[in-house]
Length: 318
Ligand code: BDR
Ligand code: CA
Image (cartoon, rainbow, N blue to C red; front, side):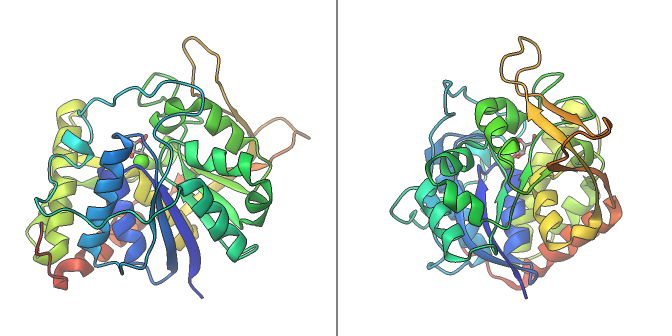
């Protein structure tokens, strides 16, 4: 039976690729997509998510719902365009307007989806955790109805990517990240510890970009992202962070996990947004599972194969 999921995201190129992967995964049943400000403004990420659902040929009935426009307790800071490019999708936004978001708010939608399948729904969180924390605070019974939360965020045992200590999603809204990580619910964290060890090579982005249909559009997206990453890092392979979090649900055996106590630093002058994890102290509560190992070849092959599958899907608007 496919695992029912709702995907909360802030597309963002790797979010876009993660959505394409999820929608091409028979192991998953995507019940809805919710959007949160992060890589771009709320308007931009909703628009981008609509474009990606169009590209994937997702049914109109699949709900796309807009959520929080900024962090719980802080002002939103514009993201620079160095990673995701103009508008969040590297300027590759089609001229044709995307499908509209469904009415309502993501926080309500997430709760409804959880309560509709008690014990069954996995919430996959790929952006700042603002929507997720707001849902858990407003509808605690819906949080308890979730099967689990699998999130992309944090850098437990490695350097951050927005500061030395913090990963981007956690740094955007540290209070929300802390609320979710400390919720006591089943939480699995897919952070930079593993996403930086599962790099998607530039030659594979080129091969995808040369394909027809929606696979070619996905390849163009990834290629621009990989080239911007190469300019910054000198590497000819790129972490597709959010897609690995989706694969953690569809193919859990691709990752190794360590259980530990975990929280998020909200006050530190130099460490705000840092994931703090203790997987060593004997006898300490170990509520959170943190990904600490990954089958990189298994993941990149899976991603390549699933994105290649879009080659037969005509993309008239990209
Ligand atoms: C995370 O930050 C965003 O830029 C990506 O979409 C991903 O969710 C990686 O740190
Ligand atoms: Ca993201």
